[in-house]
Amino acid sequence: MSKLFLNSGAAIIALSALALAGSASAYGSKPAVKPVSTGFTESSHRVADQTVALVQSGSPGPAIPNGEVLAFDGSEGSAAWQSVPEELRKYARPGQCFARLLVAPEFETYKDRVLVAEARTETRTIPEVSEWRVRDVMVTPEKVMRRVMPGTTRQVMETEVVTPAGFRDEVIPARYETRVERVMVQPERQVWVEKAGIPTGAALVTPVTHEAVRYRADGTLSWPGKNPIIVPADNATAQYLQQGSAQTVLCLEILPAVFEDRKVQVLVQPEQVRRIEIPAVTRKVKRTVVDTPQREEEYVVPAVYKKEKVKEVVTPARTETIEIPAVYRDEVRNRVTEGAQPVWREVLCDKNASPALVSDIQRELNKRGYNAGPVDGKLGSGTVSAMQKFQADQGLPQGQMSVESVRALGIKL
Image 1 (tube, rainbow, N blue to C red):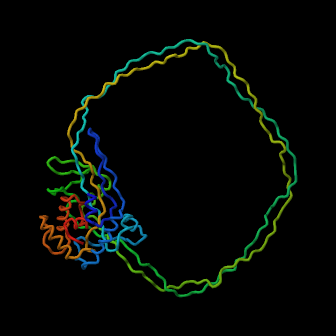
Image 2: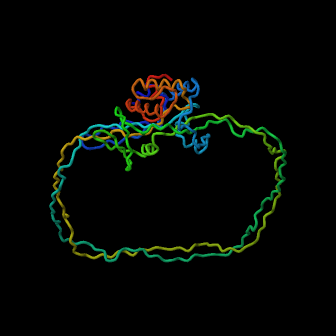
Image 3: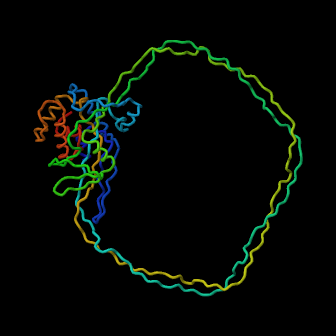
């Protein structure tokens, strides 16, 4: 699917994408879902530049239902700005909008080896072999003794510094003047505007039948069909599904600089310091000097041994084990090879979609039988829901109206 994405020229900030799971063992091992790549390729960067033409062509579309701006301070450097994914902050252009969409899981049939009889072991014990031998046995261990040798001292007179020589600084304060200057209070900046996405009724639907995939209380997905399959969901997917189909849309905008007149203090003469020298104060004191320090001497008292007859093990006891292998049979089962995963994609909203473009999308969806409703140029829940069904059938990430899925309809941006 990543190849289709690049060939279609979709301007996507690819913060996360599903990698194909490794090939599973023929017997029983379940493949792990590979981690999502967060790289933003040079190809994706070039395509993002091309989509700026979408913002420059056509007038802004009508207000989107449920598209009100949320309470969100997206100024550069703010906590809200830092909460926007790094790749969006790094590569997004003013006028582009982004939202998270959900990639559907993939399945495969495999053979599973089922245990019929467990492996077992049979053991026997061989006793130890020992004999009597004469050995030197230590009665008293070697030990080290210590004795103290006293040191020698003498009295001497020394000069001691009571107060060291130094300096005292006298400070002459600085002089200032008050002046009026034109000051930039807020520089021109880019801000992220957060908008509520358009609900589609379900965060994920199945291809062809378009049945809603349900989120279960135990954190898994229930994939509908004749034989429903339980699909594991990681933390990112669970958070996406708990938020629902109306995922937040982030749009990058530019705000102009703000200036005002302010009174400022200007330094006329800097602060000066005059240094005054202060002599040292000393006194005579008597000190005790050690000529020879007290020390300890060590001497060794050797160990004492005697002959004794002891019993020693020649060959230790041991246990022999015979392994009888387990018995298995093969069963055919289904499993998930690639889990559902939320990914960031560039999307259309009232910030970057003209009524003419929305009408073309509605017309093409209706032509293909997806029932987007009347061709009125308004981007509402009916149009987005129809697009989600088209996304499911094409194997594209599902959710808001992505630039990738518009191009898949054959509509040029």
